[in-house]
Amino acid sequence: MNRFVKSSLLLVACLCLSACFHTQLNGSVGGAEVTVAPLDNPDNVLATGSSMRASDWIGQGGQQQWDDWSSLLRLLVVGVTQFGAQLSELDPQSLYVVTARGGEDYDPGRKQLLSDSPVEVQGSWHVIATGERITEGNLKISVLTEALYRQQLQAPAGLSNKAILDRLNAAAQLVVGDVDRNGTIDYDDVLRWNQTIDGAFLLGPQDKLVALSDAVTSGQPADMLDLHSREVLGSQRVEMSFDVGTVLVETYNWESPVTAANFLNYVRAGFYDQMLVHRAINGFMIQMGLLSFDGYNDEDRVTWSIRTPGPSIINEASNRLSNSRGTLSMARTSDPNSATAQFFINQADNSFLDFGSSNNPDGYAVFARVYSGMSVVDEIAAEPTTQLAGVGSDVPARGVLLQSVRFL
Image (cartoon, rainbow, N blue to C red; front, side, top):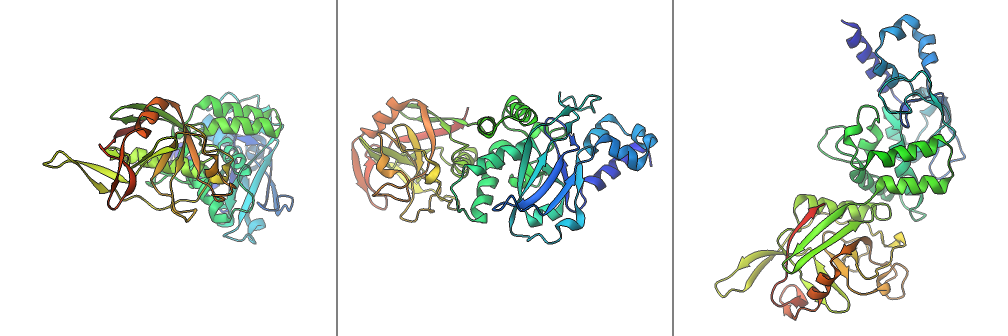
């Protein structure tokens, strides 16, 4: 067995041990203090450890073994923290916050090489995980987990663990690809994402992530970390092509992760292509996401069918976004958490649809905004309407077609 294979096996063993964490910002961070505490009681520290420096590895295995390893392998093993039995009492279903503080970044320039001049880290960064996921191991405390941690801090108080995990799973779809290559994208892909070897899976601009890393390293205050984290989540721009013109929108990934990810998944699947605007009320809004355009019959009338959506999502209307003119919101039934694929574009300032309003206290979740093409929305809203059996009133009489929805 050659030295590379031996080293690779050792690395796998180190990073896959039970309750094994890896600390990373721009590169692996050694010497960081790592703590574990309940998410709802972060001052109640249950375990404390320290991520390994290069000198720790040399002390354990000797200089010769260290010299035999490649520079990349050295970089990957720096930053490992092993808790082991300290975490045996964690509740598998409860949520915990793992915090890394201080230490030295061994690859501040992101060269995928172990630097001889690591940079001191002055701040702290975090990851949220269940007790089960923590004891499973191979958990990264990275700049990406910090971005999602800070997004979760903005969520309404009192969310259930399931709601928090729903938000984290959705946010993951907005920032990374299928890191673990299991065919789905969820929060576990963020927990496994390694800046050094998984950089290609990052969906957004690398420079936004670097800015957040540098902010943590320099110990910037929470409001600046929030600002950089918001930019890491970013937004997705989408082109909606109607038969009367084009509307360009961008999503609110930071405020509405579940709703934005849900909408973008439908876009990715082509669900909204060749659909009809099935509701248009001038001075109010236009709505789509229900009726498939199936062509014309012998009398040159539009034919249609109901398009079957996916499962419902939680209502994020409490995200402090208002249903103002040009915003996109999810349509739903009287059940606040019943939204699936249907959405509407507000043609007017419809604050009576906001969370906490007297008529609609549960609100309608805003998840995007129009940044070009509101004249097209106005034109559609002014279309003559009729009643359609099985659909309702206010249906554009001629059949307004949403031809396609595409990523920009």
